[in-house]
Amino acid sequence: MSQTALTRTDATTHPGSASSPPSAPLTRSTPRPQPQPPTARLARMARAFAHLYLEVERGARPHRQLQRLLCPVLYARLPEVWVRPHAPPPQLRTVTGCRTAPGSFEAVATVTRGHRVGALAFRLRRTSAGWRVDELCRPEHGPLPDPPFPVPVDEPDVFDLVP
Image (cartoon, one colour):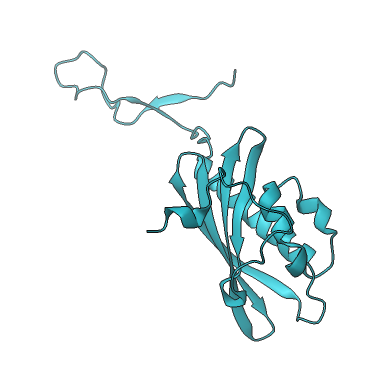
């Protein structure tokens, strides 16, 4: 256990004397490290995913490196957009996100390609296997293609929630 010196901030006179001010609470002379909030961890995770996705998209990494990070239906929908060899290499600029529900974190990454700016929007969802991306889109490219196999009807889709 570390030993940190404790000091009183206003101990100018002896405690208990008639002229002493009320005793001040003990304060630490060195601050205790604060635990990292879960949102900051998720923001770092979102930035790492966006960076990895862009490396796969430009052909610097094999697409199989994303398989464990994506839900199976989403992974099946991406083969048509994996590699964009003739596009300028993407540069990740910013990643912002927020918790939308317990076990859900939505993020948007801004990406530049040459003189063009685009976005990569995705949602991290907590599953029994850990955090996985279950929705992903590039708004400037339109919707993702349908998967090559039928999607089970009992599995809800994000668009089922839209009235």
